Image (tube, rainbow, N blue to C red; front, side):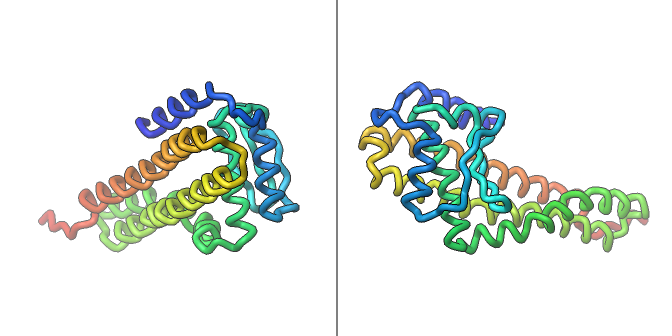
Length: 212
């Protein structure tokens, strides 16, 4: 919650600064894709606030209402970050490929882990079932850990393109860096929260218990 609040407050702060170039988030995205030689990605609006995302399955870069037609420094930074994911996809960036491959496995593990642990507890602290449940939950942590380099790399690519492409001035680039750093903290917080949940499960159920 703290990380989410921080990224929202940081975005709102720099959303008040209009880029001197006058370009919008859409303009920035289309420019970056063109400069990167990516012609098969469509930039389109999507509902919501800060719901920006890149969908590699249908090659769409979806910009939220706060980004699509906004010429703020924050909006341009967010659009550039999503373009970073499109560049990762186009260049077969390995961590991104790995994350995509892990998604169905992580979802499967997250869905079944707690029910299996509960069944293990019901059947007299059956350690085999409990350990299987904990192992399945750990897949969610693996996904979070793989996500970190993907997100940090996308932000790095965005800052590099914005700095060298003349889309932002030298004084505007640090503003974007703060917005993207705040956004990255949400992924760090998610990974930490998942780790603590896993640790809690291990401490509660992971040990061999003898109640006799």
